Length: 268
Image (cartoon, rainbow, N blue to C red; front, side):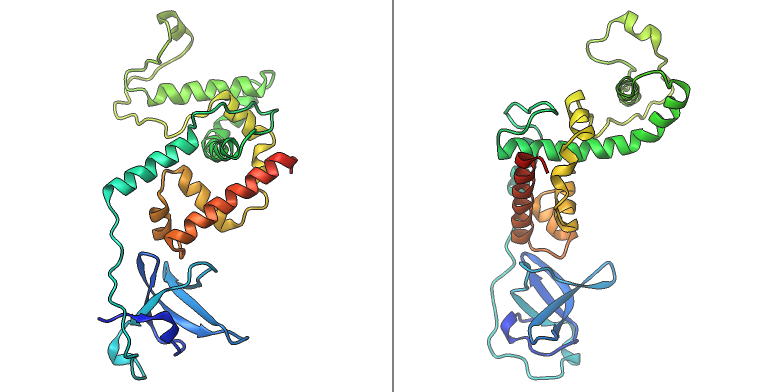
């Protein structure tokens, strides 16, 4: 079926297919109260308004038989852009470099010295938050029976427990035989899986101090994009999970990091 430039779509509420970035989505066009056009797409069975920055660039009727008017004479012949495995690999390498940069990351009491440091520390903080979210119930239970122990000791103990649970042979790098005398390792679990993210003590310090507040001005969409980047999603992958185009995802990510860098410098 032929594609038509978005400026030639002028009929409200008739189902169409849009091209948004390199994706095809179903939706409708509506005329806004002030005369502008709004583009709505179906996401998880619901119609949602496309955010600014992700306007469709062309369209076609979802069903020719239901189209109530003559179609435009001008068509668009461009194919959807191809994505290669090499491009996806480069994206994943880029995420890893953001999470584990080749620069010194400051202590929790220190302000970041660069935008790249602020970016990495905040992304690592999001991963630490997810890790601690899983760990916190166990920490609370242990604190009721070991209330006189400092919280960081309890956290450290639970991190070690998680590492042991994820080890297939019940061993940890650098441990001596006598180090295992004070721990119990259940070797009956043969299908243990590795922990996705294990924060360092510095990461936990960041998480417990100012770093979460660096993101307080982020929108829900910006925070979602950052969390997906932390989960090693490429910009293209994120675009497939949101109503945004590839270009809009990348733009919003960089704007979010600008906000974090600004907040980290001014202590907000």
